[in-house]
Image 1 (cartoon, rainbow, N blue to C red):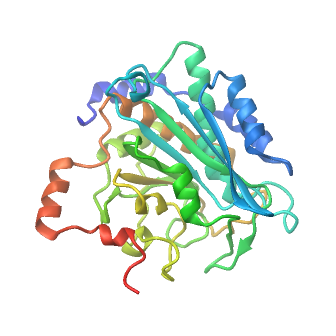
Image 2: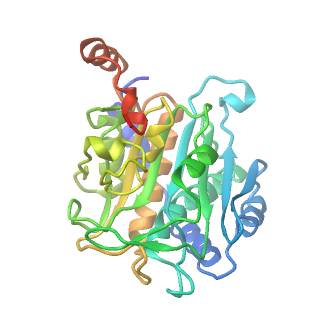
Length: 328
């Protein structure tokens, strides 16, 4: 892939779009006790989606609806082309914590942002604007998820384990992943808005993508925000190590490069808090991922330097053991 040039950045500024309409429409479908994958599938199909899959994960009363939609590109793999495929994953424990909490919780913003991108891409497609590469959007719908203790503020739990979610959302046809997640329950990030992580691949935390920072500063009109991650953040859940949250968990099951897109706040906000979602921040996250998808499909938004990655592996060896639970 090539680095973005000024002409590409100017293209982003010219074609930057607002996703407020999509965010509000999706929010209305998610902020309800009977929110479901079927409800979202009907909405996406009304926008012209032809490839939407809904799968119930879990058993008994502990279930969630996994939803996956593919928006094909003009040169995407689905049509026999060679353009790279971007995966956009909306990570969360749940949309709600009913009956303990009534309404949409902060933790649901990842699903809201990801589905808003899907809705906008479908709307663009039926109006004649198509990206070059395929875009796969995945998340899950659970309005009655449990809560769990976490320091410094409580987390939303999940009706299913993270391995089940990873298997449903991460597939071999995806060439790079943007994983969006509410990341407000910590002291690492302290501004309202969005931030991105360094790129993670095969157990390595690599340098931050210049191309993605270019997109972020165009979308936000500000200097890009980058959040810190540690080695333990890119190890699998279940090893009894502290994790910032689940934003980097897709990197444990794929060789594709993964970048986290955090929706942030100035203060610590529990994932189970209601009334904490800020439309402008969710919209900014969605718009950032949409604009990244545009240039990624054209091969001009590298998540990492391939030659540099080959060199670091040659110098320091295979680090994929960090994708596993470790020695027992």
